[in-house]
Image (cartoon, rainbow, N blue to C red; front, side, top):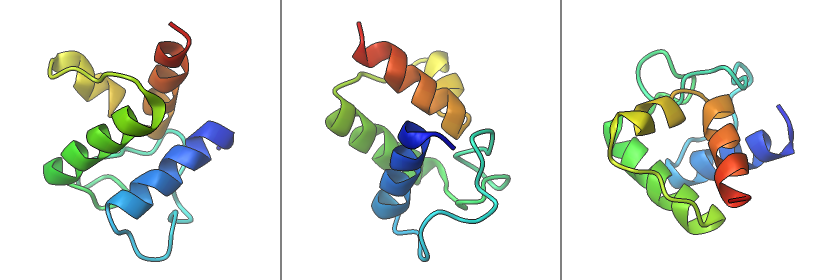
Amino acid sequence: MDELETEIAELICDVCRIRGGIPLDMTPDSYLIGPESPLDTDSLDAVEIVFSIQNKYGVRIGNDDNSRKILATLKSLAGFVREDRTV
């Protein structure tokens, strides 16, 4: 994981109250939400993640189908933050 991906993973662990910090099996390509996620997060956690990311990085994640793509993996979320912050 790069620096931003690690920072986002730590934020998610904090916001979603994940014990023990970032799971060892967490990679940039790991799913963020759902049963396949090493974080064991659900749709309610997704709302908290979106709120926290928007507040910390000043980006806007919409309520459309694109938000599912953005929240798919740690890599896709970090990529969105990088791209949207520079606009």
